[in-house]
Length: 378
Image (cartoon, rainbow, N blue to C red; front, side, top):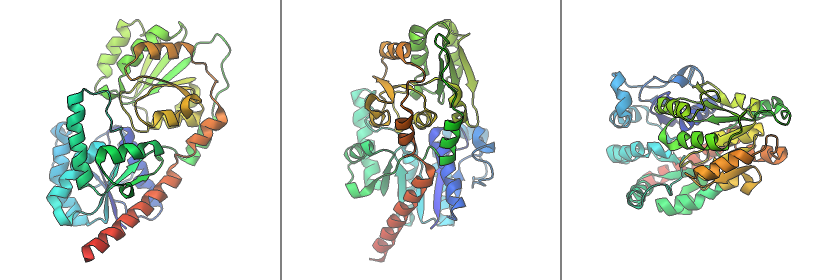
């Protein structure tokens, strides 16, 4: 079975990072797993993307970064026709427009497409007119695309309802954000709780873009943190300059550290006390799973249907409403380092490993390909 995965570039992103890991793992298992990238630039090229030998179209000038999706729609069909994959893997629903375009442009020559739903579909944070139009777009996806992967059991009903698809077109596969060696490494390097009165070390790992709402986090930290507390923000993105200015305006320049892009930020989590997440919407945030594996207490916004389950309905973290600055500040003020239930946190994290998920992906794709061949034979 040949599985073709397509991504914009090596630019950092949770969807892209996990997809690159999956391609690598599939190849190690002997699967024919080519990778298409619209362009070869990005910080992940020399770490998680190293030696993956992606297919990339010629002529990708610097300006392509501003029109990545049209560029992919223009160039990817030629690659699909040449490689003739058995299945296409759409690594996140942010790429769904490319997947729908492939169905239209390739017609009966388009192989079945498996789409991973990487963000919540409710989009409750958006105005009503946007949700109405977005529902229409989701309906188009449901009619055009073949199979949908949810990352947590709580997403199954959401996918069926929002996309208008039957249960047999939805498979739940825990998001492969972790690996068994990574979990063992995070647990073995966990530092003991600091002495009472020591400043708490908060950490955020996120792409600095509007969806993550880091500005809300900074304002809440300014209101809820103690004088000796620090916040380290790992990640880069288009909003970095604006967020650094906001931190200065809030008087936080000595207590908030912007680390930028780091190759493997999960391995740093055991050196912190508390994980913060302030997103407006998410699916199953990989950083929350990494925080659970590291045994960190978590303070997060209720940014998707999976969040309550991921945090053990309150046992493994604090949830506040999306956009609730006061609620986030209060949670920051009261969260205690070392308060996480280590065994519950570890048990939940072990459900989300690449070792088990990739096999389930392959078996799901195999069934889909078999059904596709039978339909073509009729």
